[in-house]
Amino acid sequence: MNGQDGSSSLVGMSFVKLNVTNYRLWAMRMTDYLQREGLWNLVNGREQVLEKPEQKEKEKDVKEYEKYLEKYEKQELRMQKACGTRRMAMTDAIAIRYYDEQDWTTASSIWLDAHASYQTSTNYDSNHLQQKLYKSTLEESGTVLKFINHIQELRDKLVMGGQSPSYAHLIFHTLEGLPKTPELKTWVMVTKAALLDQNSLTAFKELKELLLAYEAELRRERSLLPDQALYTKGKRSNLRRQESASPTTSSTSRIRGKSQSPNSFSGICHGCGKKGHKKAECWQDRNNTTASGG
Image (cartoon, rainbow, N blue to C red; front, side):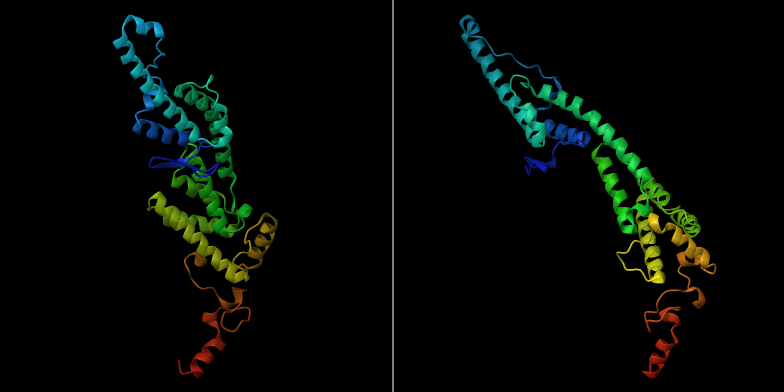
């Protein structure tokens, strides 16, 4: 066991402890473990729970009594193991309610109560996460990397709750979460066509790389720092004004990596440090290369 809210390590198996949001995944892993240990039928009620033999039964038939008593004691040890295992695989806040021996004498009673208590909570949390996924935007995150990581984090939480959005869904949510600017609308159309023939996982990875490259080029053009937000709600109108003020900018050529005319470039040259042109178009850089005999 690793901490109050950590993971459970049970004889070679490791999984996250039961909390308020992960019941489905936890129940699946617990079922695997209890089946492996031969305890599952005690939990699901298929194995009949033996009653403790009374002393008067011994007086009738000593051998039969001792045989039944041995069987009862073995089952009692297995029952204790099943109950203890389940409690150890819960966070302290949840496990503490299952230590009253009068109310929780069988592993089946603990299993049924946990299902009734946390299945509904998991369903509610999954719906909440789905809503967050639909509402995720690049403007909220500020940068492409934060945006993609946020979407992947929501997917991981949904998987823990028993739902598993496909990578095709993640592509949809990623593209839907981009700002609705004319430049990006064109970019999305070209990108969708480029990803069409790939499987969803490969396409999602490719989309991430394309977005990062696209963002990097925009940063260079606008002289923004790597950690500076390119898209935010407060700057969206400014972005549109910049686009409308630069009619010569071609979004499709930027996607395909084509260079633009010097007059349309407003960034800083990495060769001479002056604005208005790129290093590949810098005459000073070319003169320096010629003078050095390059």
